[in-house]
Amino acid sequence: MKVSVDVDCTPEEARRFLGLPDLTPVHQAYVEKMQKAVSEGVNPEMFGDMMKAWGPMNEAGLNLWRQMMGQTGGKGA
Image (cartoon, rainbow, N blue to C red; front, side, top):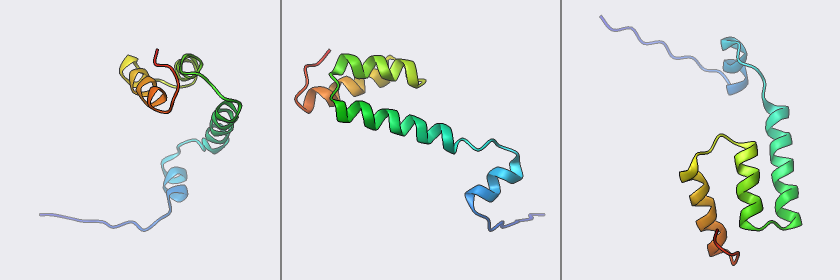
């Protein structure tokens, strides 16, 4: 026997139904800090420090950011 149920709802409705917290203010604050940091000009070392402090990234993720920053004209770490 196979039973299928289709639920048509928005992501917001699904989040509320599952009892998950609304992280919109946290996400917005994170994005604003990143935009401010980028607009003020960061070097790869500063960017790496920010990512370690603000996000759950391991060394492989930081190496990816270093490579990307190195290709945009910054010095590689």
